[in-house]
Image 1 (cartoon, one colour):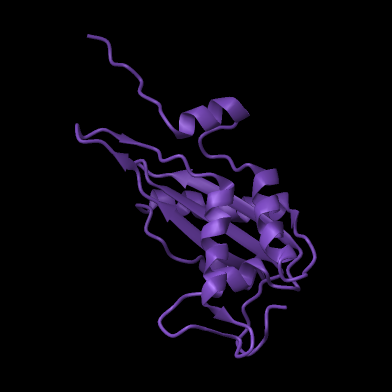
Image 2: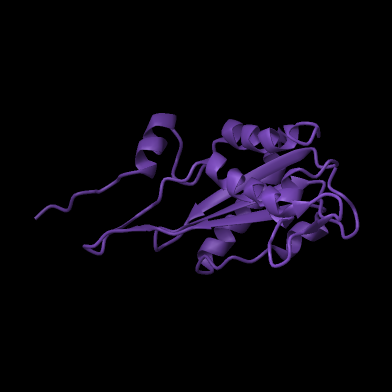
Length: 175
């Protein structure tokens, strides 16, 4: 009996865009960042292949280590900021797993949605909330972004975006 290759969701995106399963839509990624940045009046980011190579290397390493989310100890030494995003696999009742269809925009918008918990007046997050991903996205002095993504063995995915120069300095407002 011949096995069928089942590919739904992300595959439609991959085949339509001509991308590989572990590539990033650079234009969509940059545009998504710049949408959030324009809301607070900071200049646009540009894509950096150099920064993206660092991000992709870290995504690959996380994949090889079982896809646990943790920040790279190297990015800080290189002067980069970093945001991480993880998406589970789609799990069907028959036990099959598929890669979830996650767009670059969805990744950035998940970080940008933390804006609701950021208070500019006190330069802090609401109590019990996280907003550091958002402040890195809109960090005024950041000029370049580069991202990578890896598909884990269990069909989950890990996304890494690095920012040059880094942001999120304690006591400093992002813009």
